Image (tube, rainbow, N blue to C red; front, side, top):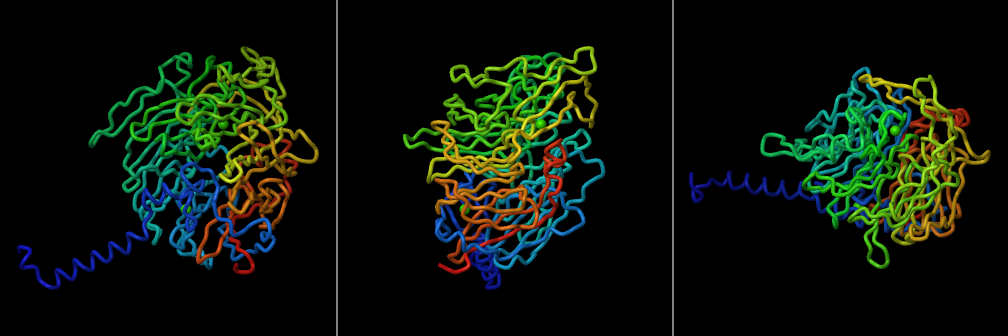
Length: 584
Ligand code: CA
Ligand code: CA
């Protein structure tokens, strides 16, 4: 049948199909939507409120004058007998909230009513090996898909409307200690993911997949010496070794070198670079792996198209304290138009790098006590070590010399994301003041077993507080203000155009502070500890704020004396949504 002979029903069907396409085209999440997320107030499409993860919203409706009128609209319980840590940031699109929960669960909720639209519970096998609680940090949106990572190191894409599985990919072998807890990052139609498992001697990697199909595009190992691969038609081909084999790792140590990529990544469209943090080198006992141990405890800048490492900056060369360098690298533009990136590292120093080439611009402490180095040499970019404060070599003995280290291995800052305000030019960093007794022990690699070679006990440094939310000026290193919290801070931060900074506490409060003075303006008790970052968006002309509540994460599991001190905190699992009592 030629075109002229098309029947009326055929034409009608074609017209209906076109109409259907245009309706669904409005509802799907595009690359342009994701690129613009930081400046579009009516949705939250990405972890971090934009690919740069500044966690800044320009919305100014809720401000210092009226934040006292902020009240809950609805709350939703994740239910189930199992609770534990809830580190998830919800994402919002087309009147739906997508929020992940502990044990690899995800919910779609109506943003107006909190009504559950669907739930997906991933069936986890026995024998998963998550190091630091059964957490998840959130989902990614692309097209009509919502994509999230599971504790058995799978990546799952669900239909946003139905919650049905569209594709599912295995990222790594959970029996070897791999797991996955981050929120994926979408860049140019690709979904970017990493892996957890640095405590089990895994090999970290950054992977890009076609977000629509799950098909691997490239994979980049983060331990120096391993081969990268990229897609060429139907097969994966070699794409260059990461660094140079045996340059910074002796013998076979690079084969089990850790450098897990377990936290959220960021991206800047001007550099086309994906910024991925890497965790500790394995094992923790540094005497078993002399050398810098690239690319552990580093920020890696990876070209989004080629999957090659363009630059790296190692925050803790030859790490001996579990100072995972996974903290997010947040790019920002200075008043004189420089493109920089800030990172509040687990090792206690705040680093400012040129986002294009990784050159160190500034480095300063953002915690009060650091024992392992006296500072960062701004010329060489390397730390000035205090050698006697490295845990001693156990050599043939059972244990090496014990030292007291600050920060503790849970870090000056851990997984909880900071915010950068485009209004004040300040970073708002959720920090902790604590130290640890640590010693090294002999250890050898065994698949699926902890690969540490260390014993430790975390201790508070002060009687009255551990957590400290700090407003940090990246240009001067000045702490502009701080808010002290009794329990360690483990949530995340949101800054707004209304001059507010929001963060949650393990004691259960979501709090709002003045962004210039740090004055506490509002708080609400959510019923369990908050270890997740808040978000904000507008709907029907009203500004909403949301946060997930549910105490857990690494502190109760690894926190030693600190864990005992906060043992009274109760678990939970819910999401809360707030707006102003009166419509403005
Ligand atoms: Ca947006
Ligand atoms: Ca680690």
